[in-house]
Amino acid sequence: MILIDPPAWPGPRGLLWSHLVSDSSYAELHEFARALGLPERAFERDHYDVPETRYADALALGAQPVSSRTIVARLHASGLRRRKPGRLLR
Image (cartoon, rainbow, N blue to C red):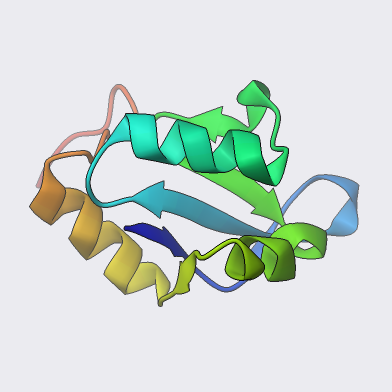
């Protein structure tokens, strides 16, 4: 399933950004991102960054709106979560 959190993360061009993920496979995520017209450079480790101007388009294509906490929990549960290199676990 493709999931997206609300645009709440400040980013380039003064826009708010969402995270687009799959809870089943990267192949599903990349296919959805291509259909949405996202550039490959928008992919970061385990998600695509989506500008607020494309949020409604993602929903129209079938992405399920969820909280940021749900995004992280579903990525962990699926085994698809990739942490930033160098982060220490406490």
